[in-house]
Length: 218
Image (cartoon, rainbow, N blue to C red):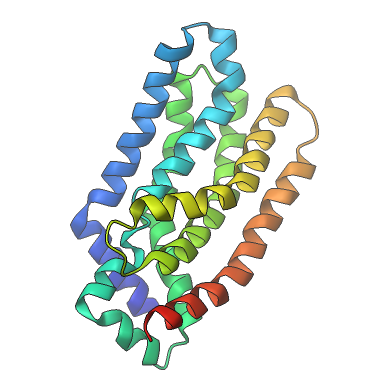
């Protein structure tokens, strides 16, 4: 598993597009929002948690179609299916590589981008915690969508349509953690729900993704 993870990380770093494109998109979203809703500090602080979560969610979508497409094109995916390593483990490793190269930089950059939305400093820790707990679900759900659309020409739009509805619970609970943290109220409820969503997705989605990949490779 470690050599496969290292391989996927090397490919992502060499390409460079996942990290740079995701961060650039996240920055564009946070910069454009004040222009669209106005520079009112109180309004920006109110909507900042939702905007930061939405920006991170959409940025994660940008590189999902590459999770399996390169391996599909060069035949590597067929070899991975018959390799001694279970296909479910392969999918977990690829989702982890996507999270490290795409989602983790967004988690780290979120407090900095929050300054552009007048996010109070008391919310910096909560946005970090919520994104750190919730973004693994985004990568794992994205792996399922990528498995469904692998091999399809121009499947990126279909992939987005498939996974966006599945992202909604993570978005709701993640933004609610930050909002409650800013208000000083109890965050344990939405935080536990967010962690539960991530744990459930990580436990179940690899099996669903592996089944879909095997069907597509027949």
